[in-house]
Length: 501
Image (cartoon, rainbow, N blue to C red):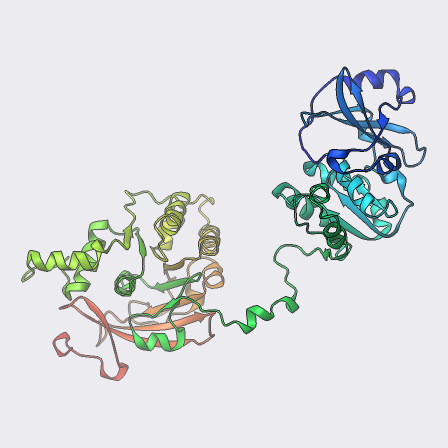
């Protein structure tokens, strides 16, 4: 009787006009063979069978716990529809009048037949009640009888094993103090189904083996032995620069890596190198480059394959060279770009990331850059709030899809020497509030003095490393205008001229 559909009628109105005192018990007591419910069980519970307006039905009569007089009944018809007679709003939990107030334990089921089932399996001796309005009304029903239920040491919820039943279980369990509620898990949908299939003993076992309810996300440490003893392999890919892998231990799925720097330092060049490296490792990559066209992204990746910045100069590059570079990058079938057409609405971007992750099976997605993303949000122009909102959405998306997200972000201009003059990066310089630092797993700062002795040398500084905690300088990269490549060099032997490289 856990069905959530009830047939509307004027039955209740007719009875209320006569007054509850005139409500007469209808139906006869008998067994329910199709349900394997005995006659003595129906007698104990007052569960009857009969007709109403010429239609056969079953009567689940409800009684006032104090006066023991009937307050109404739920009528179940052969087509599984329900109607009520009497003042059903005043009805208690089904069976509540049968038991003394309080005790060791009470079992709560989702339907009247299930309550009869559990009671019968316990030889009609121990407290069992049922909610009266199906799973969708369970919490409201238990709230109404909260004081009565609290008189028991333990409340065992034995709701249906379907999705509505599980949802109702969580909602109801959280009404009560921690440790008060236990949850029974059945091998079949509900107690009566178990009884019909000859599994009545499993219902009793489920009652005694019920586990104390814990909200989602709370884990008993004693259950983690298998997770600890079995070494979990974390999918990771190395950065293209060996020294950076020493402290970061590479890129990992389900992590958000933020690459940050001042304006013009070379953030896009770094993420293109990472994307190219991932492709060469056989990975599937999505790129959302909001400051450039898909053509520019394609030329940049092909140039890395050719060791020549073909977006600037194609001299000496044959069509055959271009075809080979295209096949190694754009033509792999493992690279997907987002042609944004100027649209940077956050919901639109998030949907594209989901599509890349779920439908295209991209494991790594690059988003360049955050400032353009927040321009698609509405927060009254408050940049801090905009960045908080965007980072929360992106962090949630990483957890939801399991991708490795590589995000590009800008830095605030520091006091004194600027980043374009080689100023050291720090987490405190990240734009907006602390959301970027808090929600990123890894933060890499890029430092380059554009006007110094080595304007093509970039220091990669590890500002945050949630995986191992190791921070500090990670690698020194040298950009060659001749090849368009970023290659790791030793800090003390930075080339003065790209021809030396």
